[in-house]
Amino acid sequence: MYSASPEESGLTLIEVLVALLILSLGATSLMMASAKSSGIAGESFYYSTALAAGSDLIELQRTLLRRHPELIGDAGFSKGPPVLSGQDCTVQPCEATRLQIFVQSSWKCSLGYAESCPQVAGLRRLPRFDAACSVEPTSREIRLQLEWQVRGRSRQLALGGRLP
Image 1 (tube, rainbow, N blue to C red):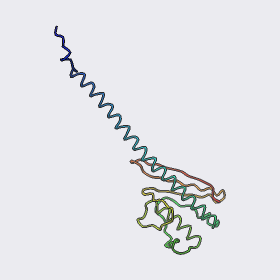
Image 2: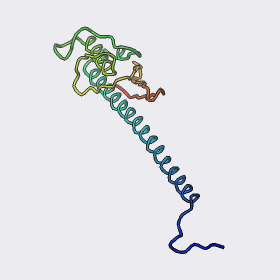
Image 3: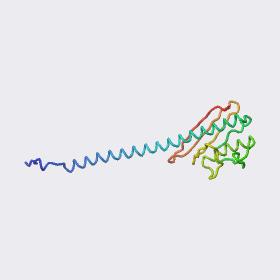
Image 4: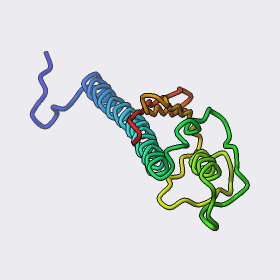
């Protein structure tokens, strides 16, 4: 029987193939984990952006309704493009109803419905989002529903609060 001397000992082809298989499984697992964490980070970016923008709108509505409580019945809007008032309330003063339409249109415009929107200070740009808002006049509760697409799947966020 042949016995290898210390200079001749080494790894067999089977041992090398098993080691490569284990290494490739580990590398594949790391790549999959990295891709998954990247996807989760992207989804949380959209979620946090929607949350911040929704909070902006609710705060805009609160500010407006503190000054003009008679607008409570006109505070909601539906999904789809904005209804533009035709008057830029940042340039010249608007009556209360036009100001309400301007605030809603500006916010909807920030969802990516138009290339050129009236600029309202502190308003975030949210391309590819859609939103609907309703206000219950008696309880003064505002409900905001935001929707967006991430990697072909629809996501939603509902916000609410009490108006002044």
